[in-house]
Structure formats: C-alpha cells, structure tokens
Amino acid sequence: MTIQEMTSKEVTKKVFNKEELFILDVRNKKDFQDWKIEGENFDYLNVPYFDLLDGVEEIIGKIPAEKEVLVVCAKEGSSIMVAEMLSEEGLSVSYLKGGMKAWSEHLEPVKIGDLQDDGVIYQFVRIGKGCLSYMVVSNGEAALIDATRMTDVYLDFAKSLDVKITHVFDTHLHADHISGGRTIAEITSAIYWLPPKDATEVTFAYQPLEDGNEVTIGNTTINIEALYSPGHTIGSTSFVVDKMYLLSGDIIFIDSIGRPDLAGMAEDWVGDLRETLYTRYKELSEELIVLPAHFMIIDELNDDGSVSEKLGTLFVQNHGLNIEDEKEFRKLVTENLPPQPNAYQEIRETNMGKNNPDIDQQREMEIGPNRCAVR
Image (cartoon, rainbow, N blue to C red; front, side, top):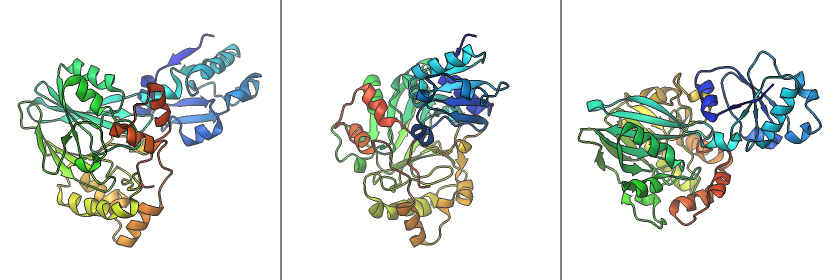
C-alpha cells in the first residue's frame, strides 16, 4: 500500500468537525506528554521512533483497522518511515506533513461575524499553539490584532479579500509567541500600535496605544476602542470593536484568566488583574462577545472552530471571575501557575527588538503549548 500525507489544515478540519482519528505519535514520551495534537474524538498511541527501528510487529495489534490512522513526529521524517513500515504490514495510514513543526504554525481563518456597513471580523486559530489573532475588515481596509510570526497567512488573506492592512495592534508584549505585527506593519506601511507601558525597552518606533484611543477602519463607523486593562502585563490593553466584540488579549479566556507573572511581577500585578476583571470589565455590557488571544483546551472551541463567549456568560461560568475573597484570588494567580512558556524571556526580548533569531531559532523558541493562563 502507498502511504498518504495529511496536512495540518486537514487535521484542523477533523478537530473542528469532531471527527474520529487515531494518532500514532512517535516522538519521545516527554514531548508527547507535554504537547500533542488534541481532538475531541482522537485516540492516541505514543511509541518512540527508536523503539520501532526493529519493526512495528509489536504495535500492529494496538492500531484499530476501522479508524483513520495518522503517524506524527517532530518534523516529518520519522513518521514517514514508520508509516511505510505499517504500510508494508498491510495497514492504510497517513503521516502528518511537516510534523509537529507544521502543526505549531498552522493558522485557520474563521469568520466570527458581520459588522456595520458590510464590515467583517475574522479570527485566525493557531490550532497547535492555542493562539488567536484577528482581522477587522471594512471598506477596503483591514486592521490586525495580535498577529503571529506567520505573516504570509495574513498578507495572503488580506490580498484574497482585496483589502489593505492599515493598522496593526498588539494587545500587550507577548511572552509565549513571536509577534508578526511589526513585520507586517513594515511590509504594508501600516501603523503599528503597542501599549507604551509594555514598550519601555523596545528598540523600534511605534504608535502608543492608550486608553480611549479610537481607530476607524475604512470609511465606516467601525471603531476599535482601546481599554486599558493591566494584569497580564502592565500595559495590557483590550479593544471594543463596533460596540459588539471585546478583544481581551490575555486578560481573560473562556475557561480561565491571564497569569500575571511572565515579567516576574506577579505580586505587583495581581491587584491590577483583579481591578481589570472585577471593576473595569464589570462596567462593560454583558452582551459583548469576548474574543481572547488564546484558548487553553480544545473544549473551548465552538462548533465552527471559533473561540468566543458573551461576557455575561463568563461572569457566571469562569471561575476566575467569581472569587469574592481578594486573598483567595491573590493565592490563585500567584501560586497556582503552570510552567512558564518555553523560552519566554527570549521571546519577550525578540518582541522588544533586542534579538533577531533566524526562522529555525524562532520555531525552537515557540515549541510546546501556550501557558498564558492561570490553571
């Protein structure tokens, strides 16, 4: 039998559609336990590649004949070899094209909704990393929010819509992934906005993004209104788009809240985080649809693959928004934290313009899941 390749886009569609898939992951056990492809109806077998060098006979009985089988490794090569061995044993299998490297970089655009005067807002789901970025489109113009380093995806998407990117925003100085905002702004001559309190060490020019800033996209009344919302970082800024959507950055997620410790300032910023969540956000309309910069678990995806929820619903269901005792809240967000993101300090310095790593170094820095939330 010939082996088939399966792309990250095809796997993403299976995640969105809740299809069944059996994944044979041939990376080492530590890497698999730390980070894997997640799907609601996916099953897994993790056997390191080196344990299969002498043959696959011992695992044949563990691979279901009735399910689609995908072999996964870090970069593709090992999965092709294992897939070929399984094929020689009569099994029909596919391998993940580009491996987990490609999975980490895939962006899937999803339409979130319509805005005034034929405007549209799109969400780009970085399915393997949990990152979410946005494009607001109106009257031939577009704004990008929290773009990743895969800049071609946004540029090509804007071209397909025949729109010009005129504004690029980062809600905060990211610590878990390298921002593509500044690069896109340079390519398109767009204005690049960054909260000044997060930009005290940056080495490049930017437009200071401050509370109350309003930016109009296209010749319409679609406004992106900045709302200072510190806590994840001291400069974190949310956006209210068209009085319908709250782009919350890493302050609040669907099932958790942002961690305040990625610049080593957890004790100092926990008060800001509580003030943002329990006072500033409480003053906003509960009908606003929250669009965060990350998701933590696959269960947070809606049926169409998007990630969103009404603010009022989050005030009821999100545990981080329902801790009355301030000491208990402080304890939660300073002590109950997952490991910090891989290479987070190097990523922060890259986003400041202090480092200029090559593409292989950038990929290595970003390997693994995002860890921007309190557990």
